[in-house]
Length: 303
Image (cartoon, rainbow, N blue to C red; front, side, top):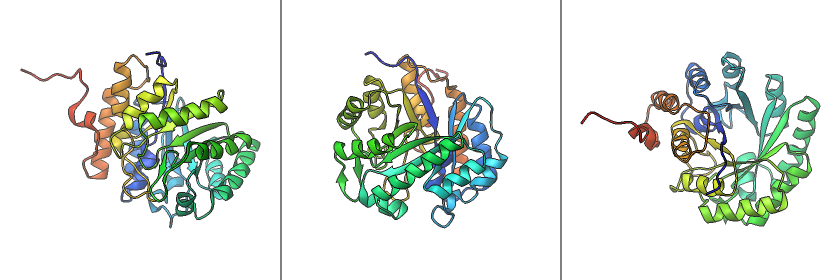
């Protein structure tokens, strides 16, 4: 297989992971963020700037970011749901923003109480403002493969939504499998259609393991040359507006698999497993990562 020699991995546990859990103390959030910053990962989604009454788990975003160590060799990003959130993020010092819109009309209304078209209109404003302030914007199209309310989302619909963002100047794009409905065949169909239309556009993929196909989807994407993925320490995460869609792919499981295939991540696997154990203690429940349970395949025990 002609796979990428290396991939870029964004750790999303501090934001996407923790937003689906009971609120975690600020001290614990800062500790997890700083622990992840010494694992070798070079990109971390740190916080989101959302209304506290909508996502109380992120109500302390300003304080978390203020107290974080901010390693100089790591690119930290913030998710913003609207123009107000984007202003807050840039005022806090972020230069990498993630704006999200759902391919599914129903999910978009559940998530941000507006139509997909209205969200895209505001994202165009976010992009323009961010570029004026020397910041970048990645546009994430969630429910890219399916919606818990509408079912399958046509490939043409997802490509059309992301195409509008590209036209409006998005610096990069991402497809989010919010509900864990993607399968390798569906990954090939969507990524293939996207690449055919936008061969030069940077693409990130964000998979959930809700139905056990997360790493299989990564492999399908790798075979198509995709080299930019999200993952969450310990398999933390989900979506408050997608019932049952718990569990991003676990960072340590992704690293364990692709490194064994000769694909470099730059991440210290043992350090990431230790960070996953910390995340499990912080959350106070068993996380879904199997590599956290069993360790890497190279780990042996006395006979």
